[in-house]
Length: 337
Image (tube, rainbow, N blue to C red; front, side, top):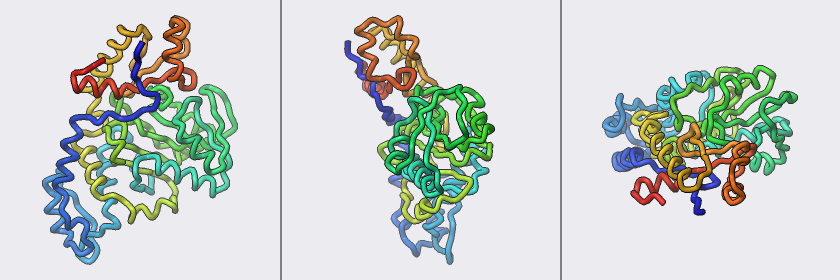
């Protein structure tokens, strides 16, 4: 049996995204990088890219590059208003190179504040535990539905464990029991439209990434960290940021938007899984996040020894997770195999 799903989740570079990125690349004027560029001139040159035109910060009549990210993040928050409606309630926001940068800084700040351990669900994104241990933090792997002493939780929704949305109210219930939660929305936008409630005050930070929902992992476009208290180590990102990538992120958020690709590619996901199940007989199920298929542990009882051996490398916590990106690429080339 040949099975080419990936164990790690790498994105699919969606065809609808590519021309938008190239349009921004071609349209960004060199003067955008000048410290003496009149702000009105830059606004005029960027006007064809965005509707309505982008209103840029000024300092003594010139473009204030240090604050360039501010109106872009504000408009991205507005574009996500129906998906993450309380995102605007976070007082601090930082541009980052994907969500992983923000997650590391959050972990570092927690360590500096005296936190000695974090909690993650069994099978969660391995980056939380790896970076936490690098910083000398303990990592407690937890099972859903159990009671634990209040602590710090790092949680992804949709869950990196299997690509599925967490049960409604799960995150809020953790917050209500006195836990502080960092919510990773790396997969948000890759499912059927869904509302993520981030309003609880014990939800201390949210990280957003465009890698999975738009397929721009390799470009590090669209990483943002939102927090209720400042993160001093992220303050310098106002200087050390990629203005081109910020413009591309805004273009994606406003021209595609969260969930914008799901109606087109969910049928592709189902078709891929149907073909795989016909060929391999594994009974893979489509996850909520369209790049992923999964199997619960209970499904193992109906698989042959050969099938069990085939899926074992994909074990993730209590089940099995399969990244379908190679098959999306083959579907595009008409070379499914």
